[in-house]
Length: 111
Image: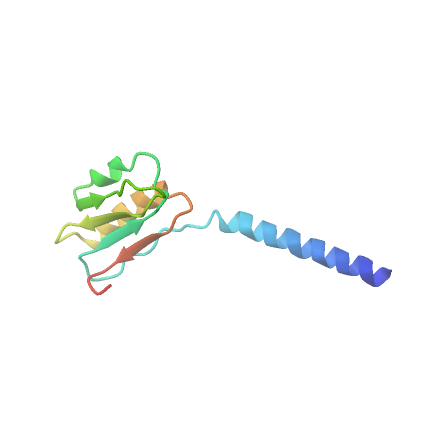
């Protein structure tokens, strides 16, 4: 009987710790680091929400493609030739703020 109670306590503790880890992991930054060299393409989504137009208005953005399909597809943003790493990181941060739980990836010229 004692072994069973110990096993139940261990299971409950493990479940609680896993839930706590997920809670805090959600608060970790999910903005990818932009590597060298450019030009870069940023892929975000499929759940980009909010005012993504603010991201498109950035002077470093050459084009932004948002497919009008269901289920939603990823948004693809091409940066201008000559955009700096800081420009790319700013656009990535803007998209990450609007991507919800969706991944944001940065593709370089070799990807």
